[in-house]
Image 1 (cartoon, rainbow, N blue to C red):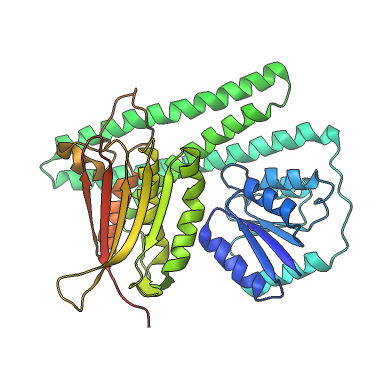
Image 2 (image 1 turned 180 degrees about the horizontal axis):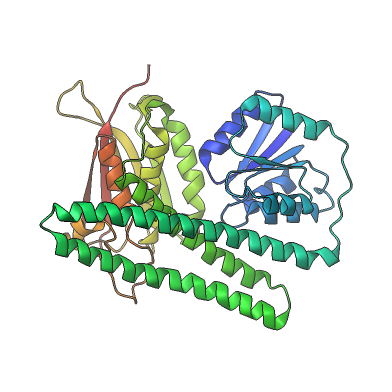
Length: 413
């Protein structure tokens, strides 16, 4: 049986590669969302081919390739990097030095991608051995690659902030609430300085200890990588907010399978819930159609923001996602109802509207127990409204929260 293993933290990329490979002779395709999962799958069921993204949580593609090439049972498996973030010559050189067979940029036409895959599979397998003397050089190049991506993200952030500030100035001239908008801006800068300072201190400390000890500490490196990913996630959310405010988003309705949505959501959040000792429950009503007309990627983004928020603010108990049909203004205008309910800390009624405001948080103190810059729910509300829907909140302090989204329900033909 011909088997492939793909690793990518974006469900749409996993779906594309799985369909492509199964349609071109592969009997089984295993999908992983990070390097740790991929490594476990490879050791359990040895694949004939591995295709991996680079920028992934927990363990990135570079680390995955390095671990595989150090394993006597797995090092001869053909390995292809398929990335949209790491695209420089140095990135490619590092990938090949780790033992990868090819380094491909996303996206690729299906026929072109399959041609490359077949070339790799048919080529003679070189014997790869990573010498101990190369470890320090490769580790240095790997850290440099991560920092190059961070620098690019920061540059994009600065550009997005400039565009956001320009638009804000134009709006403020036509608004009477200029003083309120200015307070929101200052609050954002205060929160951002606090949120960025923590991971920067972790990274700086890790680098300083490396210089002193001249030794590789996996735990220290893992902490630094976690801090980097936290910063990248914050920056991505800020860039997303700027795009929404500048009307750069486009929405395309296509047939979308709700069952695949539930599978993807479970795969993305089951580990996070389990790590906190929470029960994650997902349910889809039986009277819903198999396929609906909707912008699937934005629907998944809405649910992801709500579930991430629920897991973050819930220390014990349950986080539940329910998707069902609801009645609209008339029987011929049904609605898709999405409920995300948790048993978390809850929110005071007089502060509930604040959670949907740009850069707003219920607790803005430096001593708060949960991080973030106050963008997730604002992005969710904006996406819901742009898709023609509504979002509401029911919550009491100490009794958890329930976010309810209503979107037009259009059955796919």
